[in-house]
Image (tube, rainbow, N blue to C red; front, side, top):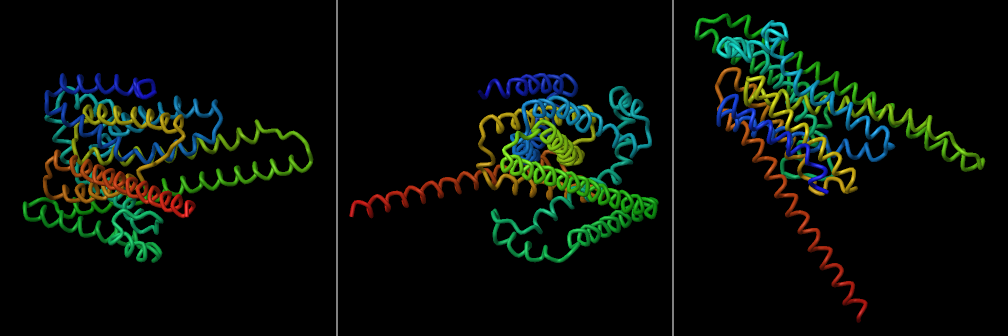
Length: 379
């Protein structure tokens, strides 16, 4: 079952790591491996969400999402989008950006370095908003309760996450301007670049969130309408035209899933810039990770068991918050790529370990309760 589901992912992993080694030696091999782990870690909750919705869809629409939908996600967001980001930031054509990445690495690195403040501000703000909206939401299950409980109370203040994000952006822009001024640079232009890019990242997050909410609302409307049609058909004793209604609901599910997947993959793409500026390594690492997201989605649907490890979503979002902070820090200071990657892996690992401990405690408690029940029945 596992080999059948993850076979293609294993094959793509082997080919991708070999290609990375041939492209840049063991350093490139390590970066691609870290990017793959990061993408899988950040997209685990994406796979869970996908599986939860996919199981409601018929076989035809499941196949559409797992073929055309994943094709869009892998090639559109993970491979093309990094090229677009660098091309726009460095004011290059996409073909020129790819050509430089392959043929003139020194010039390409120079252009990316010049564009890095804009990329870091844009991505840092987008990731920061995801993290803030998560920790300010009151959730039934809390991982770090001592921290998440008071933050959930603060989250009741309207637009708090946006206000905090803008304050962080202002501080980041000011810090960068100070550094540029000390080195005789054009601190005003760079500060404006950081501010504009950060605001663009904030706007992008709000737009993606709005689209997701729109499609989610449409999905709920279609499901409610379908339920009403089922009840009406049952009362009248008439067969219901299930194909048309299921088709509408499935279509909105598909659109909703694509928007969600785009937003999740955007996290991985932006986070990857905190680890490397090399488009080739980024494409290899994120492509491998995306294949595992697909395989994990299929596995969860076929198994019928979702999210037994309840703290993994928390760990993924704390990793997103760490990446946001690191991206903003790199506007002024250089951060080692390995440190950046392993922070995310550590947080995911810690949340997984906490989930395993929780499951053991619950199992032990259920066992004790069953024993007490047996004793009481015997008495």
